Image (cartoon, rainbow, N blue to C red; front, side, top):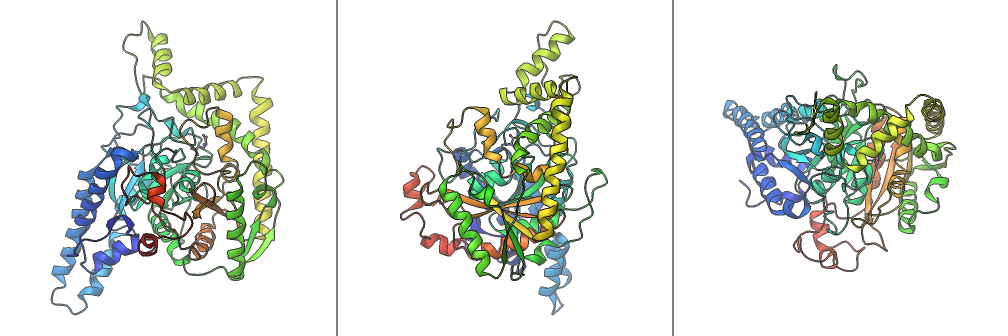
Length: 536
Ligand code: GLN
């Protein structure tokens, strides 16, 4: 057994290697993860429901399977090799602490979507992504906070309290998958799953300095994930490295007969980590990168990333996406219409909170929905209800679908010229709680991520260090052609290797220490800790 391993920085590959070498057991990894959640989550509040007993049970299954093969092969000289084969058969996430956004059903746990409406709902089954992550060897640590029903960009709309950005506890972690991003950034779990309808994986990943990927629509099954916008929703992983993202995607991707939009995926994403970008064509969109209103440090970080790709041998090509600017408008028609339809099931009869003192059925519906849903959810439902009403439908919903087709064609044309695109993720770094109060400004957080959901392509947010002005994490977005998500992994892994940056929020100085104390000065220089712990 190892004498104390550094759990918070362990990568998927390091856990695998440690298990293979008997440096530690899956049980010890689970215990370290549980201890870290216990120590940090009272301040970060990434978890809505920790499940330590499920993590320990999963770890024991893994240890038992490994011990079984070891005993069986005790007399065999190739026992070590067989031990590794046993690990392979346990799946790409063997012994890896993982947690799930709370819109994902996991048998026996609550699925609240961070809403009072579903406060007492217990999942009678598991979502396919959850099932595959656990079948792939993951140790399920719990359910993670989010914006209510995934409406939002800051996790401030959760009915159960905010999540704090581990890099600066006075700031939002982004959203809607804020709990997923914060749990990975704080080193509580190695990887996490989130969902992304307009940016909800990529924006919080960039705010929390971790990697987050929304695969092409159809790569991961949505079965068992509470629907927001069914034509836009996609599940994807968070991790501290691109390699951890690839391993998680290997575990959860592929066809699922219970989601007819899911597709066969035969790609092994992990195979694309070392291929480099020499000769690849990578597109930039100047109209986006240099758009007004973007913080200068975001523009600078994006330009620097482009230069690095060029020096690795990629050909940089300027492309145009003439209709992308209309994506936000189309999204705020299509998204609320689909949400209105999907959320009609939470009616206090079939599902959800029921107002106890209603006089009749009409009043029960009315009051249960008025009290069970928060203000942003009600805003989306009202908007969808209006946009789908007769007379209005032809003016908004129908043209929004036409615009969607034009945007999709823009991306198809761009990907005839390039193998991947690089753009910013978010126009700014993590903001303070309450700083963005009006809904329209909040909606503008997603101008770089929403077009990708509208077109259906995959996109990944890669951390590229701390902004010179804000001292906060900045990400760049790598986008791929539809169903060529391996291009994204290939480019992101090559670009990632050029940065020597921290992958985890600097919490060593104590979670109550000031941001300056925790970051040290100067902000941009890699610290000793990052040089030692930043890479596995
Ligand atoms: N922030 C966007 C919204 O509020 C996207 C949310 C998401 O991707 N779930 O709709």
